[in-house]
Length: 192
Image (cartoon, rainbow, N blue to C red; front, side, top):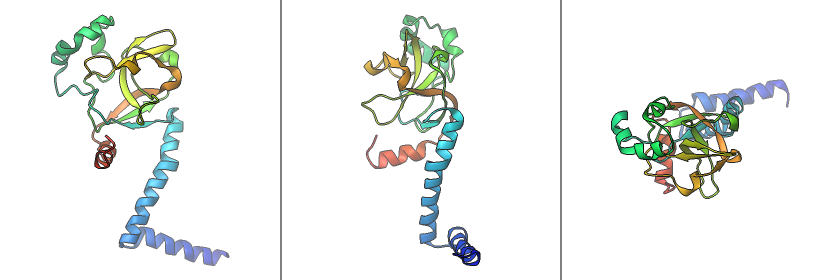
């Protein structure tokens, strides 16, 4: 194909994608946006953040403080944390002490296992669940960490020993509401 034919073809495609106002153009644009996001943008962000999961939508309420102020929330939840030698003052200095809501998006940064501390909010995977889990570290052991969802009454058995290879990184930023796109689609198809 010579340069002139290529230019004409490129202009035709460009016009179809950018300027044409048809349902076919809309569908093509939507597919192109998804493909660019999935295969270029998302991996690029992951490379920059040092993790395969740079952005994770919160799909449960396990970290939701139900709009309570911190002191009220602490009164209801302090027993487990005090049993883990975590005082109210320590917890108050942790990342996102007010938890986060279903539908929020968490930005994740890859980190070395040795850098993880009690109070960090991490994202990890387990074999029996499709989506990664977002919970707070309550114990750092010898070669493992243990977590708990802030809103959960106690620890779930799978979070008592989480090993380095399961951890994708720790939360560095919370973006409210952006994850509702994923949550809505998952709820629509019965995946939640």
